[in-house]
Image (cartoon, rainbow, N blue to C red; front, top):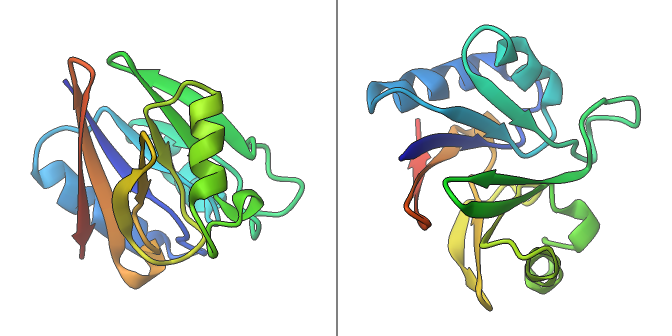
Length: 155
């Protein structure tokens, strides 16, 4: 089983990132932290010291940020599309994000950008937005034997 922390849109609020990690780790050790953009520097701050950190670049991270705009990760047999979401128009609809995830044979799409937490299926794809970490919102996910169990959380 893998236990994953998911954050997005920290926008320089490293203290909130640290607080969310304390809460996440209170439930047991994390295997990884995923940052869905707009705060890549915040995630890199913790990356080398705490745990495996996977980062995608958001629209506010700037063109010089080294993280990719999207990536696919496979954990415990589950394929995850990670993207900030702005390139897929997630403020208007999750359809394009869901289609992209299906195109890449992903079971779930993790994203941010809207600053609103969301967890639900769009077509065959589980879409999870942890909400804005700067507002105290984050998520966790358990992955085991091909099954995904997400949970939205608040500080």
